[in-house]
Image (cartoon, rainbow, N blue to C red; front, top):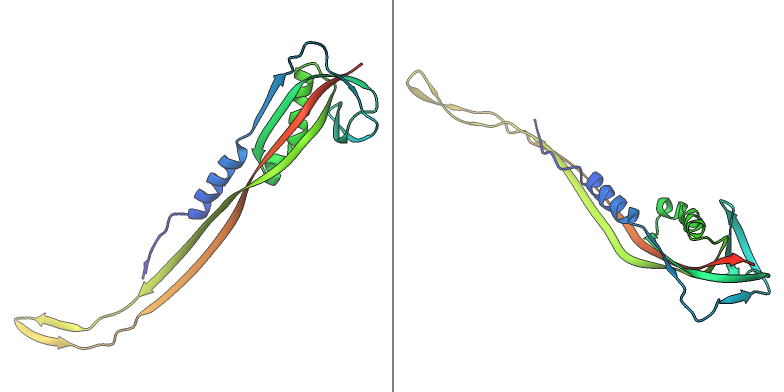
Length: 171
C-alpha cells in the first residue's frame, strides 16, 4: 500500500493568518496648536478600561484638554481585537491622558485566505511474464486496485481594523 503524503497546508495557512492578524500598530501624535484645545461634551457613553475612560460615543460631559491623537491598526479577528481598548488605555496613560474619545472605528475586508488538501491511498496487484529456470512462462493473476481519496478545504475571511481616538486630560 502506498500513501501520498501532503504538506500540512492547514497549519501553514493558520500561521499566515496568525502573522497577518497579529500585526498591530498603535501610535500617538501630539496636537500642535497656538493655544490649548479645550472641549466639553454634553453626553456620551463610556467604558472604563484599566482606569482609563474610553468614550465610545459622544464626549465627556466635563471640561477636558486634547493632548493628541491615537491611530490604531490591527487585525480584525477575535484575538487581536480582544486587546483593542486595553492597548488604547495603555497609550493614553503613557502620554499623560486620563481618557480617550473614539473618533472613528472601521473594519476593512482584505480578502479571503483559502486552501484545499487531498490525500489519496492506492494499492494493487499485477500479472505478467516471468522467467523460470531458462524457460519463459506466463504468470496470470488478477489486478486489484483500490483508491481512496479524502479532500477537505476551508476559507478564512481576513479583516483589518482601524480606530482613531483623541487623547484627553480632564480639567
